[in-house]
Image (cartoon, rainbow, N blue to C red; front, side, top):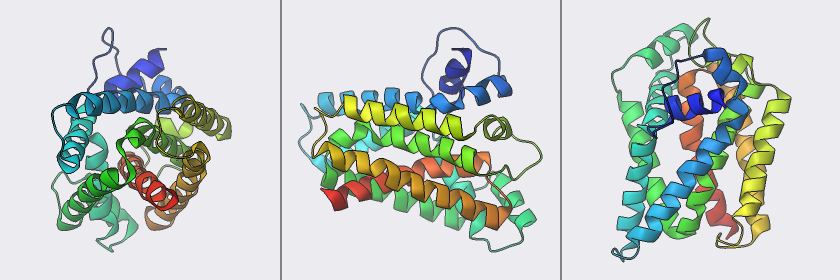
Length: 247
């Protein structure tokens, strides 16, 4: 339970009972439960949409507000990882230099472009797919972060993500996958479209997520906390895009 509370405390801006000191190993052992964090975020986003839709009729305005709310709930943590990853990877430097760039707190052109494109894609695809996807999009995205930790090595000798990778194996990925699939089935009555189509988005996202992890191994020698954040953001777009194609 402590590890799960740590995930909420350090991966979101949601209030958690008590104050828990950072424990890398404890959080790493609980990382397989990361989709649960996505479930809570998804329910909040869906609830916010239901409330806002009573007052706002423009679907693009609704999508904008919901996407902004997600940023607030996560503190922009994964967006920061996305920007840092794109700044580093698209610098086309050596592995060592890419890792240095990713640690630079300054936002570069590639990172800014990734943020803008990702933001716009989420808004337009949400309007296209329907807002019920908000329930499962954050869950599948966090599943893919677990997948990354389970299939790739860590690129740095130290870092907050190192314990997550060290404590995640195939069994952990399986637990995260079952949690995600079970939740998707549980909210099936609310989802717009065929449940089999929604379930199909899970393996599609996982395959692309595993590919991303292996790509990072080739580019920078492994994954980092930044790339694990980036895969959350990228997976959300993949889920939306896959749903747009299927439905």
